[in-house]
Length: 433
Image (tube, rainbow, N blue to C red; front, side):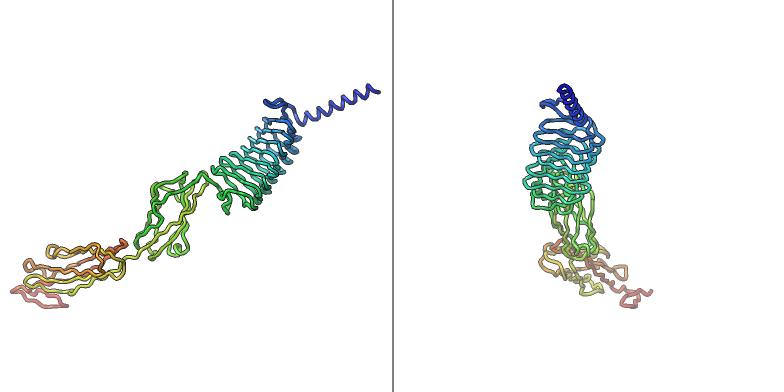
């Protein structure tokens, strides 16, 4: 009886050991007392007060992956599906250097979790207690749930890591970032700590590296009718290669059009100005972007000020004159109706027998809105033509640097020629032979 009992006991122990071995194969691991590597992980993975490495790809883990006590598990091979949960207890650690294509359950971390691969889960990622989850170039995506960060627990994001959740991220703990271009694609709730760039209000939110532009000027003045404004810049930080401009409604009402995903060229940003835009001040928001990293700069406020052209009138004291023996003198008066001083007056003879008229007197930096020019047209002998037409223009540039022109035509008639018969028609002398 005693012998039979002993044999039965030995058989029972052997069956238990074999059963355990089928589910959890034992393998020695460097620097560990013993290792647990589930080469037949279909029944689940359990590491308790031990360390192990999974180095063989697994199709389906039908159950949980659990790391307990002081256990330390490293997953270096891809897993297609985990039907249960992944749980790391306090004091235990799990490193996932491969991809887990789908988890039916959730990841619950109360210990230390490092993710360098890409994980997709139907459930949530929950970090609790003093648990620390670090994504180092990895990603976590929840297709059906969110992320929960309990008080005193932490998620660290490094090297352009990504968190994407179908539901909110309930953060009562801490989210940190190394500003490398990490992204959170979910709304964040709770009173926990989070870098502002990762809680931008309109997911996806991406932090550094910092992308900036140093504008030489943020306010460009130009004159009405000019159709481009240049915003020069002296430097950028990061690697921006694209820019957007969002005009205020008042500008859009004058025909300004928003700029979307325009290529950033070296040195200057060119903005189109509607030729019909009225004089006024038009505001817009400018951002530059690193397209590859999906990083957007802070918002820069820029302004385009359209200045009205000066309004100028030109009046002559006599539109029709006759030569006398010494020529003829007439007077032109230019008056600036609008436009600030100082004024530049540039007079030009557009048409007429050049050399028969004195050179215009140009005036610079005048404080007077009126400029008077006296012209003397000498006969140089009685002209052979019955009349000479002169067209005089004045161009006025005001203190804003804006210019406008006005012109007047006047006529000088020749003196009668002995032996010719004249008649006058419509105030014009006609030769009658």
